[in-house]
Length: 308
Image (cartoon, rainbow, N blue to C red; front, side, top):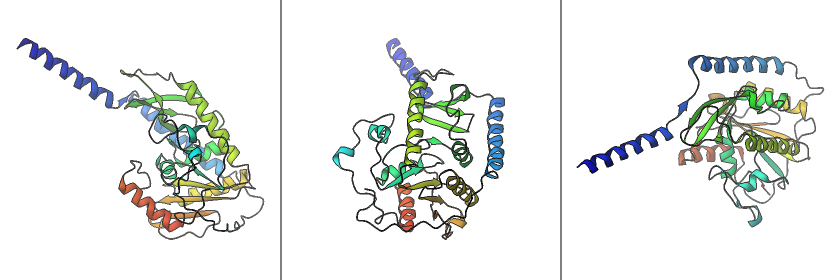
């Protein structure tokens, strides 16, 4: 009887421990949470100031229409391009993380606002490599400012604030740009506040992704940027910034959202918009892929776009 009681106690403790491991641990006080909100407001104000400094020397010109080529967006990679080793998650792979040579005619890049666009690019086999905004939470203002300042002081350790921990990962807030990293910093149980022991590896990884981004924007290939949940005026601001910083770049901003103004084409140069029922959904469910299927078909990207 006594032995049974001890075993019950042990089982109960194990359940409590497991529950603690899979429950989010928030490290911020109420005042610190207010400081994070205040920083987001500061970044929004900075974005509003920065966008007013961007001017184009000449009006935007409609890009030449690319000739359709054989192939579909969801065709398989060649054997040499297949993922070989998983990283933190089953959807990440060393092939896309470490690739330096960009072979495809069109380069697909996610610009946030969360993991949904990166997941979709990989799901439809559009991805060729990982870029800075693939696996983090990056609001529009954060993406805009990072590009505006060329990622100056990006991911510096003094700017990182431990937000919470959940399911084996720290959620880390970068105060410089307001970006949240939710898949990069690991911890061991029990989680310890301030534990960013793998900072060096994470910093190296993002430096590689940033370098790859600028390479992609300067090698003369067409680039398609994918954005989920932006407002129309934000997309127009980003178009202006990209054209200002990369005047020779042939690109299209693919903007996806579920607001009424996305139900009809805007007819804007360098922009294609489409209605996406669940723009921030990133659970890889049938509902997610159904909505992406509909949006990509509307844009003509499934079945017509060459991803060679």
